[in-house]
Image 1: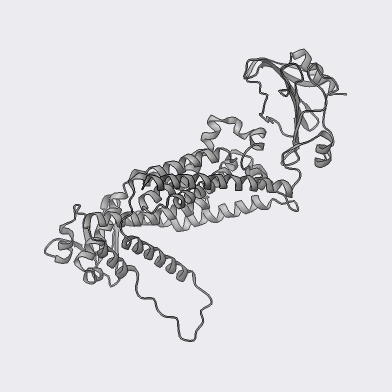
Image 2: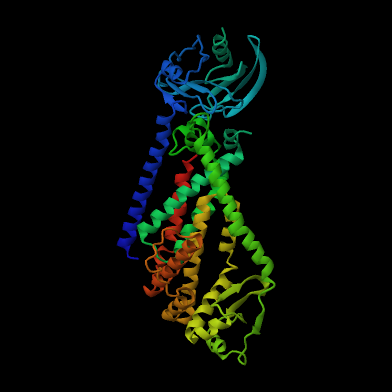
Length: 180
Length: 331
């Protein structure tokens, strides 16, 4: 095969694969039109609640410094099980836009959405009472070695998790403020 | 366990993703064949093996090295998320999920009745070949002796008393080529040599580790319709690879073409006068498909060699690489 034909073939192959990816992207988008309770990003909290009809979403009333309501990002789904993830960006100097806290609730045990914030090293784990609920507190660090804590507990039919680049004391205050 | 529960379990995730991975690999393989204009059967066969082999390993490998691939965030930003389609609900049912289960079930049954049972039966009967006149030597059939003279490999060639035109080979411990007495008297010396050379190629390649491995992996994907289709395409290419081998040792393309014509392309019967045929039976369709396959082999042989060492490994490698890369983003 001549070099010219080889190069043309490679180009045609790359173009074909690119078209395939575009086609797959299109196919991936179609179900979102047909069904509104599939996992997707929402512009704001009210839109998500209206769209999915999730009656109770637990939100904090206390926010530590650098964090504020509303969430900077919301991902939610109604099927196969209801789940809501709220991202809170840090507004501190030099940290703008960086997700520093995630609050998620899901009607499925062991739900772990992954994403921009992960507790990669757990140093301590302890159970304690959070306003009468049995909660688990984990303290450790994220992938960059920055201190990070996670607290999770069961509330009726959902499991709630608060994960943040915060000291455990601050994190507990956030969690407590979610239970009225 | 509900249908939805199954598709969220590891076996369900594996089956669904294997199906989508093989489908994507199959499209990539097709793109590659068209883009580079691949005609060499050995290269085409390697390309067709990618959609067979890849889905067996991709899902476990991806999960092993990239566990976050199953996370919500990954799925959101991915190229294609199968769960979106599987979760579509209409009147309390999951039509896509149900459809996929039906497709998997039909494919499994096809595999069982058209591949596994016949292969097992063939394996048991291999040791008990048909009543043969005997192993050929110079005294018994000069036609075959002369035909075999110039072949570099000399397998056991046995003649079966039969009025049909038959030639086939058995593998394993009793590896041999069987020809029917009718075939020996019908084909010329060079045509018979070509036909036997083709069967010798089957004997040699039956022990080819790549093909044996591919078949074993294919059995793991017994439920996958894409793998079923691609494996059959690879098997058709196998015939063309064996044609090439036969030509390489006999140095006579036209003899093999003539042998194929005599063996498999009897003149088609004209339709009955005044009778319009509106329905085709399954056997007629199968026969037509077989005829097309033989015609394709003949046209390849007549068009001459089309080996291109430049793309021998480039195309299968490109297909494999693109398959891995694209499928990483298909969950």
